[in-house]
Length: 361
DNA sequence: CAACCGTGGAA
DNA sequence: TTTCCAAGGTT
Image (cartoon, rainbow, N blue to C red; front, side, top):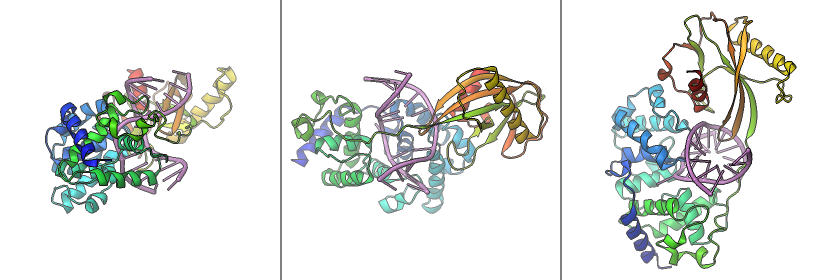
């Protein structure tokens, strides 16, 4: 393949059609870095309003470095994969202290930062500093799987390393940032997963899969396994002022560091789909036990509110929300606290709980 | 390597 | 309704 011609065709196409995105206003590494982290596993249209708000509140490395983690999390609320922003925050603090606030210019230094992997290193260093380093994401994997008829599973780490090596042989010494972004733009708008739009492709003449008529059968990708299902009882507990009992989740795992309504796994995993009086009685007994275990308060009046269903990346929660009808008196101890009426904006919750709060108001 | 880690939109 | 997924990284 004439790699020079391939690069030129791709760059010409990209420079003609590229979108006017808010992180493409200049070549500052910090906003580019923020955008790359937000864009991980997340759609461009979803990211844009989050990016605007985040950059207004934390416009520089120094501003983000001195922020409180709980405040930063609030600006990420709803984006998901919350460890991304916790690691970004930690990494930016490291840049502020160790590198005087300037994002390092070498692969070795950037890779050391938390939450920064090979893709983010290549994206930031190539787009901000125009360094010839590959930025291989899902788009680029798909594009090259078709371009070179790569038969291996594009989900494997080995394939990703292989494609990074291939891209390195294409990447121009000038315009590396545009080249990387062009590959991603091509994957996002033309060389899409299902039914690629080869008729619109600027490099279709270089594509082995299209030449073989195999563009719709590549790339190969292992299908994701089904998520496990958990049955949970969620508690709505209020005190005399109407404050709601909430608690903070651990600093690791699902929704790390975020707040939540108290909940417990259902003990009897027996079929609950029947709304028999018996199953309701069993549930109510569990609710009363859960409340007493958490607060020591012996509630007697409670009622079923509603069922909720929420899908996470690898687990599904089937929830039954119960409300204690009487005010509960308890001095909340960490990780619990009473959230006063209209103070919800002080705490960050996963959408699983914001969905419930929306129904309550 | 495989599992973990969110969310909402599209086919 | 089900499936897949969208500019990944960590363990």
